[in-house]
Image (tube, rainbow, N blue to C red):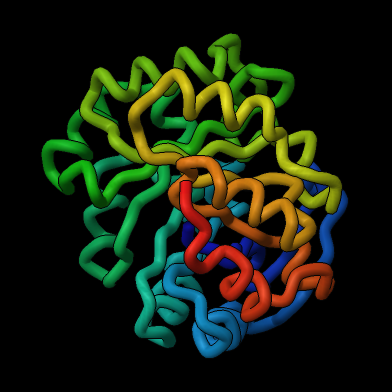
Length: 242
């Protein structure tokens, strides 16, 4: 299982929010590219980046910062936040982004997801399933839809999506624990690949996820606070059989 560091960008800075609340922000670095270099040097094989401004506003706001980050590291980078048009996705892939992550578009514009699968290929796309009490939230987690997480996975699989990223919003940034019950339910009901995020705060949480068929875990706050050491985490999950 991959352990993927998260870099959330707001106003050009590396920040973390609590449960997606834009009013509860902690700035960890003025230079996201330097943070990416640090995680890559520690052994990260992939980095997850979110344009928080773009997620809320519906169009990317930190493109130059993201492009500088991608250029700064040799490892693959996946990017989400404010990607609501095929042209935006194509521009990011042209800039070296390895995977495009879409959330709001999957709920509001399934035809766009279908076009992305066709034009970019299924391996270049991740659908973010960001859920609060089972229902998917959109627009940077600021608005709740009436779409159940499991239903979104089924609908997107029909559009050719093969990889999902599940986040329990109520756990995100809390240093509590992942919603293992929801994760296990999604894994049981779908043959797709899953990346898991939200609430991962100990190496034991990662070991437990690695023992499932989760493909990867995205870790944010716990890496920045030091609750999880990336090298230790990578060593801990290496070789765990599913």
